Length: 212
Image 1: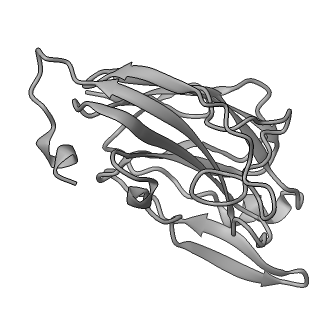
Image 2: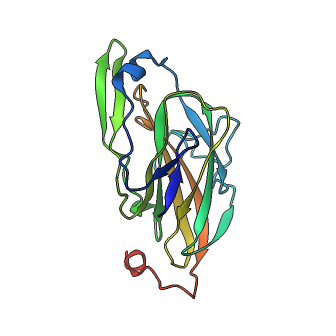
């Protein structure tokens, strides 16, 4: 059975529903703006030490600064696991989602629906919908759920479909609980990586992905 690593270093079976962060814990959390860096695979844009620019969906940037492309294309084998490594640079409770677009970034899913609560500073996020099990084009959801600051990076492996594509887009989205609405990204931060995937000829092609 395939397993994913959660933020506390324990294995979590894929079929178990990821928990939502308790409201009592969130109420005690400080208001802050979270950021993360995409360390593996290499990001499609140049990131600073905080991971900026990263607010705009689907792949980062901010209004007036779409980001400088790295022109990096990460090579991967279809039907195999791809290593994901992110570093949270400014803490906030939340979790991550990973999705894959084959032909166009327009295939990437919208940011998940969120629930909010009213505060003196306006609406603040409480939770976000998590796909369990994830459905195409989402590869994994509810990853690295955490309510405390983590000093080291979050890491896991995700299973790629067995397809070939010269320019797929891997998207990593971070949901921030107890987060004010930001103009560019709502309650989310976004990073992407460009992939060149070559199908494994020893395995059947995942036709549901190629028909999209």
